[in-house]
Amino acid sequence: MSRRPNAAPGSQGIPEATIARLPVYLRVLYTFAEQGIATVSSEELAAAAGVNSAKLRKDLSHLGSYGTRGVGYDVDYLVYQVSRELGLTQDWPVVIVGAGNLGRALANYGGFASRGFRIAAVLDADPAVVGTEIAAGQVVGSSDAIEDVVAQRSVSIGVIATPAAAAQGVCDRLVAAGVTSILNFAPVVLSVPVGVDVRKVDLSIELQILAFHAQRRSDVRVASGAKSHYRAEVGLPALAGSPGKSVTAP
Amino acid sequence: MSRRPNAAPGSQGIPEATIARLPVYLRVLYTFAEQGIATVSSEELAAAAGVNSAKLRKDLSHLGSYGTRGVGYDVDYLVYQVSRELGLTQDWPVVIVGAGNLGRALANYGGFASRGFRIAAVLDADPAVVGTEIAAGQVVGSSDAIEDVVAQRSVSIGVIATPAAAAQGVCDRLVAAGVTSILNFAPVVLSVPVGVDVRKVDLSIELQILAFHAQRRSDVRVASGAKSHYRAEVGLPALAGSPGKSVTAP
DNA sequence: CCGACTTTGTGCATGCGTTCACAAGGGCGT
DNA sequence: ACGCCCTTGTGAACGCATGCACAAAGTCGG
Image 1 (cartoon, rainbow over the protein chains, first blue to last red):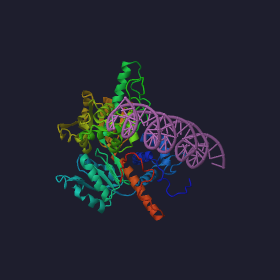
Image 2 (image 1 turned 90 degrees about the vertical axis):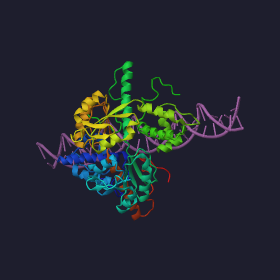
Image 3 (image 1 turned 120 degrees about the vertical axis):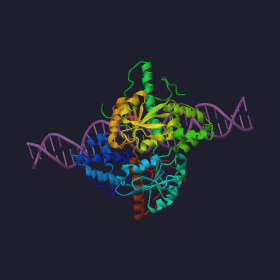
């Protein structure tokens, strides 16, 4: 099916938006597999993932024509294909810098180990924390060892869970040591050379976005209440389809 | 400029993508203010925020014509305007459900209090944790008190930092109690009625996205190394401008 | 063995977001 | 007071993502 002249089925031109959704599909697929479900339709899968079924089909079509018309997708097979596409069939050593509450939360987070991510080390600059055990068999190392850890354990992914002031320095050292992918939890904009991939998670920003929408909701309610019409609660057109939202039937 | 029949300058039609960037601008503006800088140009601000200057100007133009041609933007004034637009001039009580490592990290995160977010309560279902102090003056309450806390303290924002299995139940209770904005850290797709805003932060998903790009990089390097050409390291066109990335000059 | 039914995969149109490029506008030096 | 120069604000083009609607394709019952 679908003769392709070039090598890999997808890999080359998979849209970024699709990549961001694949992990969600994967997680849902795992829950289906645990329930012993062998095949799923795009409709079911889409409902469980909180997306449009057409979008899901188009997303999956980017990695190839897995799926049988009239039947659906084989759960196990699809799990394998999505995992392979995301690169989760191989082992990814991860180094976490910063052993505060957040670093500890990450070290204890079960979602890592189960997806091919292995915590190579958790490091911290505070001598009082170095040497303590924060997770099963996970002892905090010194930040001085960043270069050694990265080199000796072939780490290519680094997680920054330090205070904002220390983030850029840690980032520079990680990059210099050879790390090419960085997940940054510190509330700063990191500068990195080209070729290094940075993703950012900012807890405060997410709350601020929520606050904006919450304020808008109450503003609209007040304004329309003071003026005339009703239509206060129900989502405006701009609300529908906003990212990070999942809405099901009332 | 741009006579508007309706009330507020923006508020109505601010693109979602712009909203997501405003908090970043705001944070950068604070750092400028701390350094005693009175005015900034769009170029400087954009560089510090890691975005295109045209994009920044268009973003800011959505909230009004603050800024002086030939000069730039007044830092303090812009801080106020952005804060107001995001709804940060008012106080937002937040309830955190789940006092594990993540919940504790959130309770201790300084970025909340400094932005108008006040932690009304931290709740947990585990009796062993209830009653312990996890931050300055912050004692963990029982999950049984969700409804009381929400009602008595007019909480409209809830943060879910529970295990995946408990998330939907907590979510339902929060919504029933009157919460209309939810920040979810649990790796599940939440079902909520329309009118409730859910944002999702999934640590594992971010890592999986990084893994995909890392794999693609190494795939390209191997493939091109085995075949012919050089161009292995430098970013492909698809890499440039991908969201969540910030790259500065080498 | 065939026909009807189910579900995938996708062409197409629409809308949103980004970027370029430039005119409009205000300050500052002379 | 005037003109130069700098920066903002925005019109317009482009590209990406979303969602509809349908043809292709395979299964299952009879």
